[in-house]
Image (cartoon, rainbow over the protein chains, first blue to last red):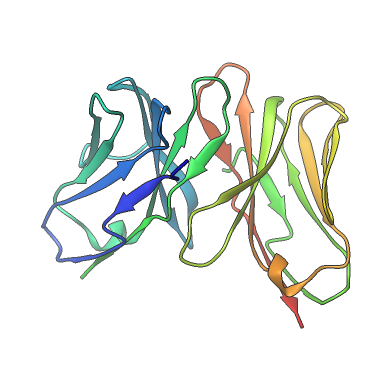
Length: 112
Length: 111
């Protein structure tokens, strides 16, 4: 069974731009969660989607948004990028039968 | 403030030594998971514990869930360089859908 895939793996953007990251969960998994990981803050929860609906949301500004498609693939968007948005963005998929999460390799975003 | 406090933050040991990483909270969790993350990669799930007092072994790794389900520990016996990585604990509160992660313990095993 293929694992969680994320694209792109690396991204460099300029302040003020916007960015869209993509995540394909493990086949059959309907839940996708997004996290931001930085050296100073660790893993911070952004939001979770289940069957195309946002089920949970962390404490991030409205510049961070996401969506999930009918095939469970998910995208997250960050608008008006700030230097502090530089981080590793991880997505994790979860089956409907347990709370175990399976992470993708992440997208390394650098904002200059 | 982190819901889960991990200690120590950093650990550097020689190959063959033992180590223990702790994960503590004042909250009760319905389950707790341990992950290992290598640089540039996503965390990989090692184990899930759900019952107070539960002990699980994964080769040289031993995981324990506290009796009150508020804390957990990870013990590595005879550590090897391949054990190097960031160890993260994550807990699920009984009234929540999302995992809460600790800040992690960076383990370095020197050959």
